[in-house]
Amino acid sequence: MKKLILPTITILGIFILTSCGSDSTKNSTSTTTTVTANVSGEDVYKRTCIACHQPNGAGIPNTFPPVAQSDFIADREKTITQVIKGKSGELVVNGVKYNNVMPPQNLTDAEVAAVLTYIYSNFGNNGAPVTIDEIKAIRAKQ
Image (tube, rainbow, N blue to C red; front, side):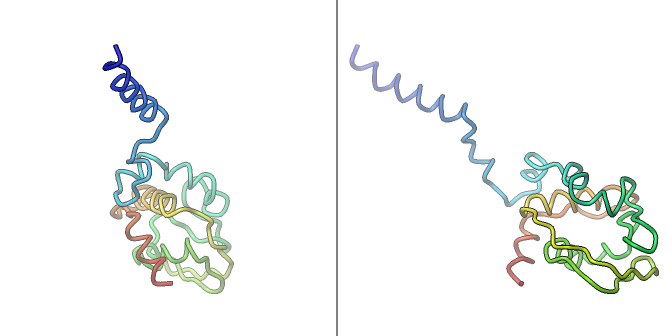
């Protein structure tokens, strides 16, 4: 009987730990799969971007630029930097000048990657997914 107690307690402990969400992939931040598994880019967009850039990504004329079919987002580093650091002053998107403020967004690396991946794959855009590693590399430069 005593020989069964320790293995039973060990198995029970492992079961409890795994059922409580201590899955090591939840803390992994190096792949796009993790981004899409844990963070919804659409949810982040709806929470942080939609007021200015609108549900259809068209922005608000003469006030906030579009993310839909935007030539600005072709420069991934500039786009990522703008989300992280914000920007004020003149900005030209699709040949139209905008002069407003975009505050820095208080988002995790996973949220930035997810929302930009969402933008790059919607609104008539066709960019590649943004990875957490890209976000980290750009944050490290600043």
